[in-house]
Length: 108
Image 1: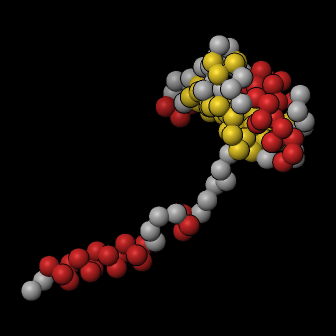
Image 2: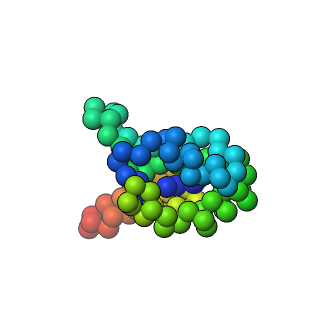
Image 3: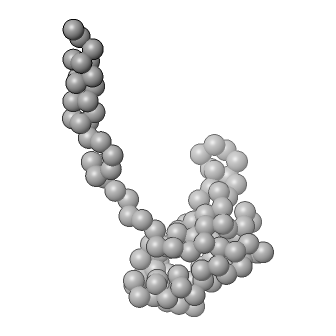
């Protein structure tokens, strides 16, 4: 189960975050997002924890929701899965049809 953890202190480490979750089950990965691509490398204040089973993840979410880590109350929820672009918003065909329809409406 993939878990989103938000409102993290900017100086929290992956190991510190792992310690909080390992009490509820096996943690397979911890990623704290940072600005390495723009050069600063500073934490962005959120991350993801991957747990081995859904039941362990749900227990961790319910137990850690609102817990204070380094003086900040963290947000803990199940992460949304990555989606393909065809499932969200308008398809290219729908956009094209809408633009063509508007263009036809303007001609007299």
